[in-house]
Image (cartoon, rainbow, N blue to C red; front, side, top):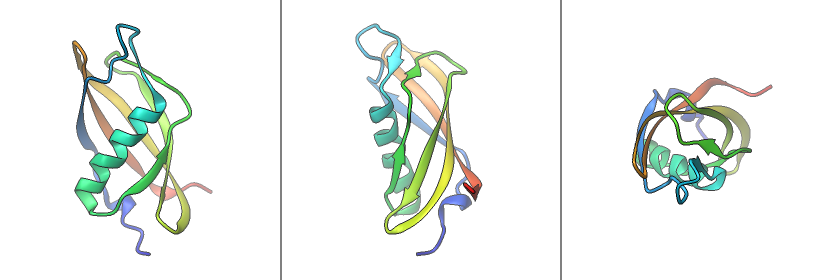
Length: 102
């Protein structure tokens, strides 16, 4: 499999309706799924993303996740940063690391 993930630039993504019932947090699983959706649209291959923590729904909040692609076990770090929050909608930038994790 070709390593196409490091070729990604920052991907702006709108996560509509992710703010959980006024709790001000976005679930780690839902953030990971939406990031997978966005990257699949951009590169045509669906990665697997795992995020260890929920994300606070406030501008500047970040989380670090792990990406693998299909049958390739190589892991890449992924930074996800909240860039805007408007009611129940949150916008994120997703950045895949250029180098795999060691």
